[in-house]
Amino acid sequence: MKGLIRGFFLSGLVLYLSVLIYPGMIYDGRLETLIIAAIALMLLNRIVKPLIKLFLLPINLITLGLFRWVAHVLTLFLLTRIVSGFGIVGFVFPGWESNGFVIPVFEVSTLMSYVLGSITIGVIASSIGWILED
Image (tube, rainbow, N blue to C red; front, top):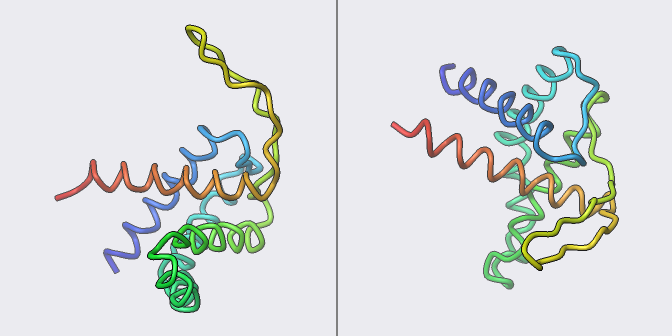
């Protein structure tokens, strides 16, 4: 029970921080939506993600784990389908320039936004897990 409660709070914090950091991840701003999304993400990570990983095991073995990210993207896709106020959208990256290094303006598609969103969630979850390590 303690693990479920901890997973719920960590999922909620990760989703909230991801929405603040990543412009392609949106939710309607209601606390109820965030709570439902946190519960759904926790259940998806504990129940559905292992099944997805098992289904993708042959591909992961052939590619030596390079397709591990597909399980994260599929989990995020399922989350956006389950929770109506939470979504992933494409957006226009405004570009960036610093000391002669230039990243031009470009459009991020919805599929790429799912990939970048899952990376964002993974990095934030790993960082929080590292900070809270016993």
